[in-house]
Image (tube, rainbow, N blue to C red; front, side, top):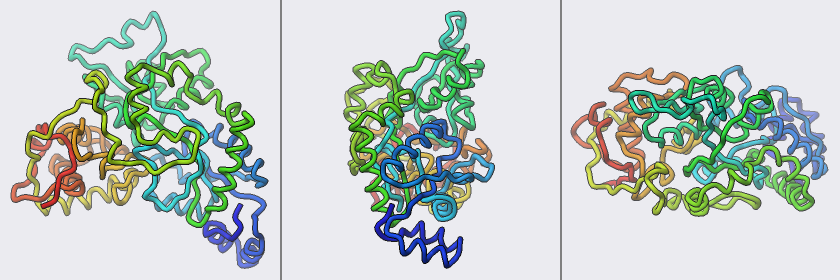
Length: 424
């Protein structure tokens, strides 16, 4: 694992006792590491199989923590603090940590390996010739789309036009919403479809790649500060498994089928434009300012280039201060203490508010937030509280305070694209 004792191993040894500290400190390469998987992940079976193969190839024995990351009986997201606690208390490395070009965790103190599974979020419909209403809109012109709260599928779903949302607490239930007829379509991570099919082999779906900057993801190994040598050994093992075909054999049934991964010309072009795919090599720093350059994509794909021709609604300093408090209480757990993104995407910087040509409007964000957030209790805040939270988001993305308060009506009706606002 490490040539020297890692901070994580040291913290674990302190819990076990001073004698164990001395034993680990004397060893240049610990003989085993504890592995955790992400809670509720549909790819947990795959993550454990890959971890066993990788660590065995690296000459390191793997034991799997019984608790897992934040295994406290809840399903309310994972904060950076909880990740840190789990790494100190329960495990040395996390298998199946999700990364993407828009939420790559580069602002955290975690270290990451190369990716071992490239996958994506997909659009799922029921394959049933007798289900005439699969994609038929309701009288109001809307179809119901299922999405998983506290996940990128929420942001992908809200990009869809003429839709209402069935917000589910797990990816399994999101797929189940289509299977049971609660929704005509679902936006979900592809491994969740694989896991659902294994549990329900009689169920068949039509699957298409979701066209969105939030759709492209890669699974990696993550560990805490001071574990550079561990990650080097993991990367070396991944390279060997990749070269001799064993990694492909392990991940074959979990990877996007070629017909889906290839997709339409529009989908291929959008993924090529993505600044960092993290396919088969080490993760590279992504030029975040380019994440939202989607010129040339058709309006039907949900990415509409809009010019910043209108003024952002006004908000005052008191609203920002109150909004910051609301964010800390209800949003930081999933979106990060500094809005940097954690189990849910970042709410600051170019990935959220690009310099220009954003397809998201202030009104659209407010409407979605006030209807679907916080994910564990959608709609729990008052109109005034959602307006204050919107003021905080605007301020943290470069908009200046003014003299007038932001009202819920002004926030919801705003057609201003959410481009990063220059501070004066």
